[in-house]
Image 1: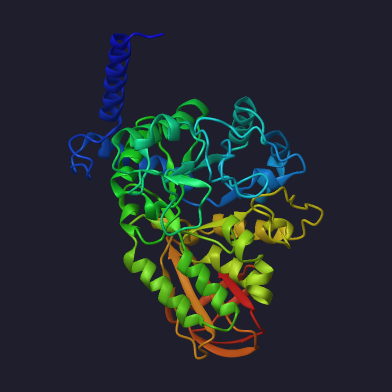
Image 2: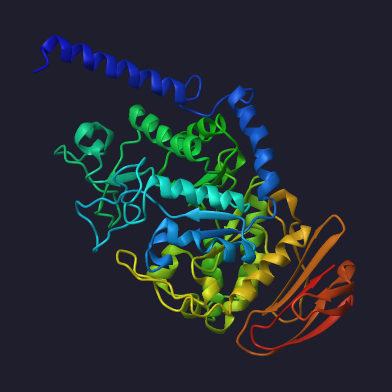
Length: 470
């Protein structure tokens, strides 16, 4: 057995190494925001320009490996890369790929967001070598690869729980707790006051960038993550390479100044579902867009979507949520400012809610929606006005006589896109005051010339839309 003296020395060395690791990863000075002349901050700003070069017109695609194929493996998913390349998406965001906790597990297979080892790979999906091969194949085809990172909580059987219980929030009885105010009983809440925990989390994030050359992270539950941790993590990653950072959040828009490039357009999504259900109108969409454009820091933007893993599994398919307005709302997510998301199976008309804790394979028998999404991706990429952030143009609304008509233009350089939509389940007649936007265009989806008058009358069927490009 190890002597008491040797144990003391070992403990001291371990503490010293932990302290050095924290000092290496933490910002200079305090854990607060760095000074404006911080070299690391300047590096972040420089890297931000490099990321913009490949993300300025990007479309993101969320990959649910478990449900993607019968095998549910990295190797089987790789067979879809040629089709996704044809679809035109740029960024592949993989839901968490790590081993899933067994203690307090929900369902048979458990939640991806109950992480048992941040550096491991879920054997359900394959091996690290398989993931590395997939990343390499994806990059060879021009994709960027993002991973999901879950910093706020771990599985109950993550080794840290036994080895470092002080890294977790505890109740008055000294028992580790699950995230307060949630039903996430399959995970343990971390204690953000612990600096060693923060260093370990950032080291895990660095690992996948350094060893697998991934291009960024979608960070889960940013609303529960301290702002200074986001600053630490971004700076630490930027020391390795430029990364794209997506926040699963909509409230902390200030983080888009320098820590995240994009966040979630939750408000827009819920407004669209309400419009489809007759509970909101075009004016509510305008209210969101005005708020977003007034609030977001220069260069930051939202990720727009009609579905994702949460909405599909828990609230409904796009057909359930939007009904006959399904296509209209998809067009809106590609036309308004923001980076649009396509969730696994949307291009195959995903018609059921995928089980979250069980195996529930996507059917690829009908790819009739692939052409529609290819058109949307081409629309975005082919029109600079629709690009992301400051690389695209702002949305400027055009007055319309019918309150159910949403009309706006976006302009950048010599490119202009005008969108007119009937956001109701009834046919409408509306006069749109195009003013300076009047002129000759192409009706994108009809493939025909279109002359837009300064005062132009539109007769639109229920949920009909016109996208004019020049």
